[in-house]
Length: 370
Image (cartoon, rainbow, N blue to C red; front, side):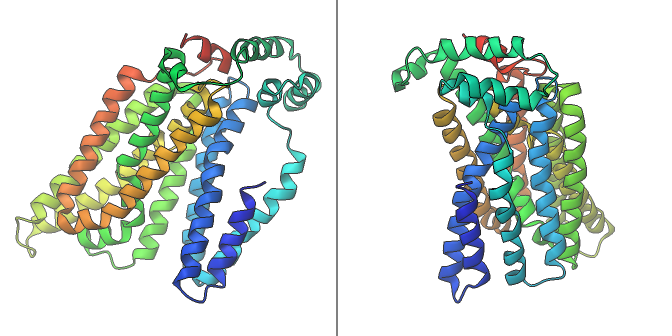
């Protein structure tokens, strides 16, 4: 509810902007609101979802994000940016009254000592006919073991049950951004034009957005069947191959004649590689890092640790977005080579350190780190 307020004010500042200072202020407020939402939504979903649906429901968050991006691309083809900003106010306005009908997280209520409210909320979420006694006992046991001391000191972070999940959560969210996905998405029209002379950049960008939605929808269906680790490895491997194709294509374009058939083929290959990168990113690295982060952080440091992980994600998103244009001007092939190396390292990171959380309760996941 709090996050919806700066979002509304931010969109108003953008839509009625008289100079660039209004745009900066609006973007700053939007960043503040989205920063809160991007963390609280996956955590809330993880805390209310049944264990057999937690991955799918968590992935719905990313699916909704990609749907929103695609819708913005589509509307941007027909309306000017001021009207588009006004339209951005609508979901924020619906969010505030809508949240009055949504129950509070049972695990948060349990942590706050509101036992009756916690059981009532869980019963509402599971259905009034459902037997919640086993889940209630697991949550009570977990809360009891983590609230013996209410404050966490930095010295406590040396314990494996704290530093390991924090390292995994931050690592995945950092690598998600360092793969260069935002640079590719934000500058897709520039990349397509440089690669194959695609002039209808807006339509091409909308096409990329639509592909991303379809691939994320597949992830939502697969994540609780195939597991998190497998999808992350497949996704990272696919991104590495796709980025290798793009990098090689751009390097070869630089050394062959612009009127040769090889030049045209390399241009097509680079576009195919970029699209394949977006698809493979959406199959795992798009949604699953947020799902895992929301699952593995202990409840008593979830606020602090989750905020650090989210800050890391958005900081590196900013770094990639700010540097992508300069890197592409320096060397398109070199830029995609850097992103490829990060994706290759992600395979190693997931293989060595990321635990499988499919089919386990949040409490079982926490106990596994002890």
